[in-house]
Length: 276
Ligand SMILES: [Zn+2]
Image 1 (cartoon, protein in one colour):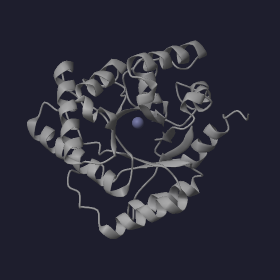
Image 2 (cartoon, rainbow, N blue to C red):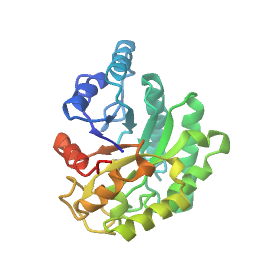
Image 3 (cartoon, rainbow, N blue to C red):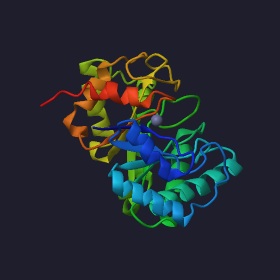
């Protein structure tokens, strides 16, 4: 697995690469806009050029994470409208920057089936609005409140609800903290293998394009999303050892999303990799 972190973009999206280099990362995830506001200025041509220059110089693969405000299946029509527009805008930013994947949370809706339908429709519209290669990756969630995506079946159903012609631009991002909080016990060998088999059967491992590597502050099945530093939470170090040595995921990026100590967390993960 390629090991990296979510890097800051203060000073412009292109500045994230030097932060990733300082953290000793193999890859990086960024926001392409302010993650806590709806309004976003368009990217300037100069900044796009700088970003592409840095991507070429460092050769570090990138992914983007969407704004936290986006809830494509919100029961509030105004939020839903803003979310659908925001998803398309962010996918367009990825396409412009040459970022291959936009990772987003499916959102919350009290009716599962209706929520799944709305998310898939938002995705279809965003993919229509932004022709090109950039993919949408649905992230597995902890299942807080009425949020969707905490069962692999939700993620698969969302993908299946996108018309077949556009589905090749739809993938999945698996967050370790979220799956654990959702009740998938990957902390011991049998549980890890059972979970990955289930992921393969329900979602298909070929559709898994990225991982978020986070430990959890909260216990198994708590349905609460609280990231902890690698090996310091309720999951412990063992599941990360399984993941970073799993040959099926050797080519995929894994991003640490703790609030600090990215370099240290990447070092801890790298220390788990068995030499061949
Ligand atoms: Zn995540």
